[in-house]
Image (cartoon, rainbow over all chains, first blue to last red; front, top):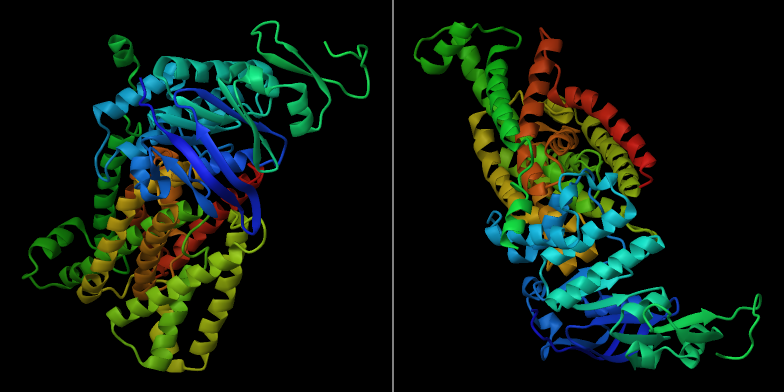
Length: 271
Length: 344
């Protein structure tokens, strides 16, 4: 089981260049849970994720891991606790699945040391979890979008971090692959206790898979908690500016947002 | 569970053909050395070659020919290794498959500084050339990268190459301008300018060696971090790489390698491009192997180019830089077309 960590942001102000996107955010990530950040486009959810994963340096405020500001922790040491899979990593030409997955071991290796038994085991285990063992010698260019994403997540897993950040891990995937990826991430959380923090676009999949939701609007945290408490018609109206009805997902019983547009609305009363 | 893992463990995390490539390149290296000692304006037979190598006390014309070709051969190997690794580093740092000291204009910058040094500061020793060349290479690298990363999309491969080509054209016209008005400089540098390893001597090799060693050591030290950087700055940062620092160290190593090589041999193009692509093709994407191996392939390529130049140009000789440009330019065009297809 993964270690329990206290991970939080304190009055984080962050953004790009002159533009400030997050205006003093306090977020505390529940350990060993699946956390999902939701919000409209450009609300700062990706910025928050990147700031927590130290890809963006906050303009002011701090990101704190177990009582210590993350910029005070040596990068390699931090990389053994925090892992991130960004939205669009680069695929080097001609790279094989094993080579790519193995690169997640970087923070565990010394400068001139070769691969240790631990490295091999971590790679094998990650490939096993992501169900890509049979792709080991294949070239990444030959894989489908869903396979490719599994390879990237496997790479993030070989880093063997207690906390894993993922920036929209299901974008560009069709619905079947989206569910597959989210199932695999849930396996990871349930089996190993890995704390997962991710940005998801699909609010219904977020409501189903999240243990805990953070709702962002214009760089402010406006709601947090379990999906059943957070996802309401009011919140959807506030965050997305969308009129909707919230029902119970017939499969998972989690809240499910049914949008009310201007057309095709047959039932006017809220259910 | 343990059994399962054992079965699934990838056999070895080594490029498939590493051993074959290592053996093949050592054999190739030896062949190159023999050929480089034997071929030229005067062909030396096997027996003469052995006599010249192992019994230098027996004085004969062929023996002295062999003796004279030894430093030339060693220098072309070292110089090729430097250019190979330099190209590999520049490709990794800029994440640009068509980067090379010559394409980015860094060689020309080094050359300009050496020419200026000779024309205006009366420098004349190999060590002085090297320092001038390194400063020139460094300034040019910074300049080209600065121009190439202007605008919103940052330093894209194509912009870098355009900036490099433009800079290179401008700088080489400056080189010509300085040399044309000073015939004494021009005589001294007609060969040097095109890039020739023919004027090598032991003194040159000893001056060059420390730069080569430092450059290659830095390259090997940064290779695994460059592996992470190849996946994008965000992934690399997430894996604990100090991206700015690694880029700086690797670029510095690339610059001193090509600066030192250019200072002594003149601008030789495309060796870095050829060497790295050959290794990537055979060994795959792992830079911990392709960067060091680019030293060997670079050495072989430049030495073959030098030998070819001696054979083609007989009874005189064609400079190695001309030969590498002849092979390298088509490869550059091929890569550029393929990049367009991959819509980079």
